Image 1 (tube, rainbow, N blue to C red):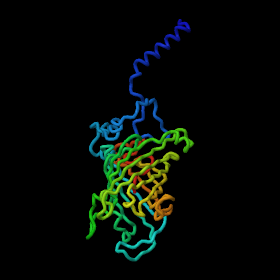
Image 2 (cartoon, one colour):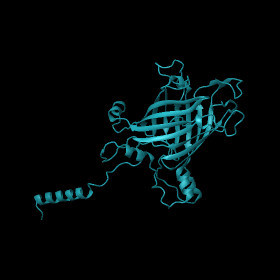
Image 3 (cartoon, rainbow, N blue to C red):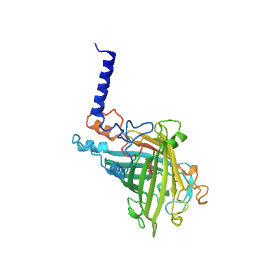
Image 4 (tube, helix red, strand yellow):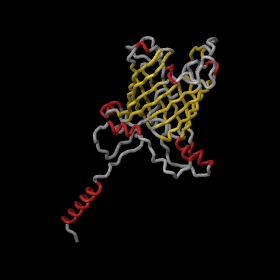
Length: 348
């Protein structure tokens, strides 16, 4: 029989050997996009590295392509389709597309968004718009919009994206264009986790996480013959409960001569955001010309200038499995096209 001292010595040797064998292994960490309430486990702080950030930001995730799935299965898994309906909160007086017959109208649109994220974080996305009263579609309101680039939604990553929400036309008439690349916007965004001391001050949950971002935006031709408009954005997204969150972004325009009364000092939104396959979104957002009290007095956007969006994400993988006679997956599917904290700039 072992004595008490011998038992203690045996336990010590076991612990020492386990430390020697496993102490050099990589620490356990969360590989997926962190969501509110999740903490990293055992991750050691090795200090910030620019090269590490660049690798995280631009490295293609190839682990999903192992040759075990058909082309159709891969496309169903990596594509995303969202169908949505947007309505303005309040009616506004507007003339028709010919510039006459003004009337109070509540703008309403139906949208279909098709995205591909198979080379994540590299993506492409196009949205088609149908206006419920097409006679009152304005010249700046597009038939379709599109964006592409590198989009990361985890903290300490860099994103570079191009988006075009100009007056794109599927069948352009005289004076219209299919699209004008110069009217699009190039956006570079750095995302970061808001310091815990600030989060603790603003949120009662001791496991809450806030995502912040800083962006630089550049539009080559923002008006006919006027070039190189630039502005900076600083935003934050705050989780409320599960998929319910709110977000806000402030904008800074270095050259005031490039701004108009329609350029907002800040934008904001809140709602239920579930961008995973089979999930839905119900959210309010305001991209109206909201103005800071100390800013341009001509910017008089208010809450009633916002819009409400309802969208549903088709579960393409389940649809494919159904027609292929395969069992549907019951496990939850992560978001493939959007951050869990809410929308980016002008997502609808």
